[in-house]
Length: 469
Image (cartoon, rainbow, N blue to C red; front, side, top):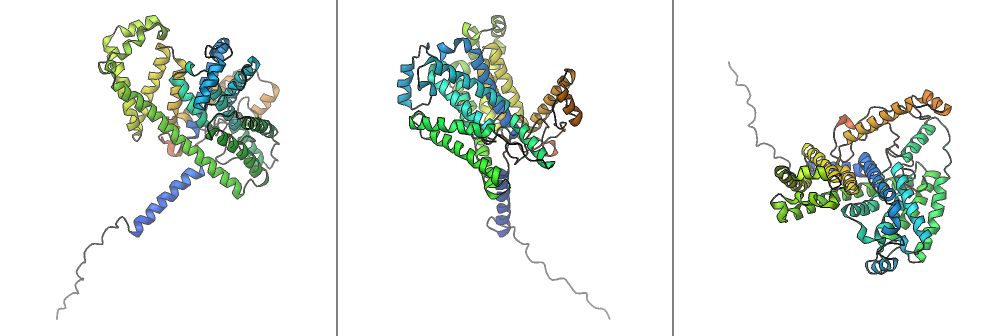
C-alpha cells in the first residue's frame, strides 16, 4: 500500500518591501538622525583644518602688519590721505567698527597697531586662543575700517575669517593651549593637583572693564551683533571657569561643551560655503568677460609694471600665447568646477592642489603674497585630515631632530631623558596616528587621530575655548 507524501501548502505572494512610512524605515531614519546629532554635538569637527586656518590667517596678517611698519602712519595712521575726519564720516554712515576712530592721537594709533600685532602672534601660536581671537578680530576690523581703500580681495577674506575664528575651537591641535591642556591631563592621570591658572582670570578681568567702557561710550559701531557677540563671549568665559572649577564632570560643563561644538561645527560649514561662493562668483564673473572668453586675460596683468615684480619671468610667460590661453581657461574651469567636486574626494583633492598652485603663482608672478596666503589658508578647510596629520608628524619629527642637534640647557636635557622627546620637558613621544583606518574624511575632520604635537583631549579642559582656560 502506498501513501501519498504530504504536499507543502502553496507559497503565498512575497512579503512587500517596507515602504517609506514603514516602522523599519522610520526606525532606521531615527537611528541615522541620532548618530548625526551625536556626531555634531559630541566633538568639534575638523580640528586640523581649523588649526591650519587659524595659523594661516594669523600669519598672513602678522606678516602684513610687520612689513608695513615703516608705512603704517601713511596707510592707517594720522598721516593717511584718508583723514581721520573722513573715516569718521564714513563709519557714521555704514555703522562700521574701528577702535582707531575713538581718538586721533598718534599714541592711541601706535597702541592699537602694536596690540593687533601681538594678538596675531598669540593667535598664531595658539596662546589663550579665545582671548587672542577676539583681540585679533577687533584689531583687523579696526585697521581695515580705518582706511577702507587700502584693501583688496585678500583683506576681505581676512575680514570675514577674523570674525569666524572667534566662534571656532581652533586650538585643539598645534597650539600652546593644546599643550597646556595635555599637560593638565597628564597631571590628572598621575593624581597630581591641577596647576592654578592666573593668566586667564587676569585677562578676563582686564577685558571686562574695557568692554563695558566701549559699550557705554557707544564705541562698538552701529551694528547690534558685535556688542552682543563680545558680551556673550565675555560672559561665557566666566561660565566656563565656574563649570571647570566647581563641577568639571557635571551637566553644566557637558552643556557648555555641546554648545561650543555646535558653534564650531556650524562656523566650519559657513567657512566652507564662503570659500565655495568666492570661487563660484569669481569663475562665473570671469566667464562673462570677453578677455577670459578669448583666452587672453592673463596677458594684460603680466604687462603692468605694478604686477610684475619679476619682469623677465613675466615676459617669458607672456610671450607664449599657448601658455597664456591654457592658464586663462584653466583658471576659469577650476574655479567654476570646484564647488561641484566636493562630493568626489579624489577630484576635489586634485583641484585643490591646482588652486593652491595657482595662488602660489599669483604670489610669485603678480607680487600679491598676502592675497595668496589668505586664499591658501581659506582653501585649507578642504584639505584631507590624513595629509594634515602626516604633515604635523613630519614637522614634529623635524623639530625633534633640530633640537637634538642644538646644545640644550640642563632642564631640557632632563626633560628629554624623562620623556624621550628632545627638548620638551615632560612631553610624550609623538605617536604615528591618523584617522580611523587612515582614511581621508574629505575635510570634515572625522579622522580624530592625534599627531603627538601638543593636542588637547576631545573634551579636555581648555583647548583654547575660554578666556580663562
